[in-house]
Amino acid sequence: MQVPFRIEDAAGAAARREAAVQQLRDETGIDEAMIDALVEGFYARVREDGLIGPIFAARIADWAPHLAQMKLFWSSVALSTGVYQGRPMPKHLPLPIDARHFDRWLEIFVVTANELCPPVAAKHFIERARRIAESLELGVANANKVLLAKGERYVRPFEGWTPE
Ligand code: HEM
Image (cartoon, rainbow, N blue to C red):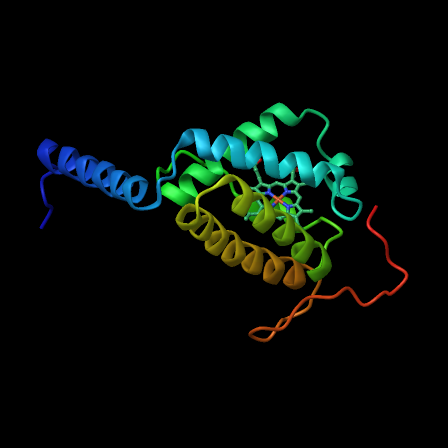
């Protein structure tokens, strides 16, 4: 039997989503200004980094749209606002990266989050960053025909390999 669509159901769902976002804001203290500062501060450091900076530099000519996307991404990830509509996985699969790059990415992220955010917010961001980094690393390994066991890291086999 088809259930008739009711306007008040949709309104109720939207209100519940809004309340859940508000609860996350209240619990973590995270807001758009904090996300802006984190994203700007993080990528300023990334661009200076000798290992991962060149990988970004080779692909991102105009940083403004990338930073804008990353602010939406972190709003969706940290506050469940749903404002990011992209798919990060396919963007990372062709990159010349492995465990060493993910470790450096996370190292910079942890330092930046701890510096710019209060402890509860930093912890919230960092937990999510770790989880996503792990899933991206699994995906990158898979794309290179390597199936990682739980907890195993992806290290590219060719020792002389350097990021382009
Ligand atoms: C080894 C570490 C990483 C490197 C070198 C890297 C590099 C890049 C590059 C070059 C792009 C732009 C790709 C393009 O537009 O074609 C990109 C996009 C993106 N990255 Fe990463 N990334 C890394 C790790 C991560 C992690 C751990 C996260 C999340 C926690 C992340 C989130 C994103 C997102 C959301 C986008 C796509 C934004 C969009 O929709 O346009 N990245 N990354």
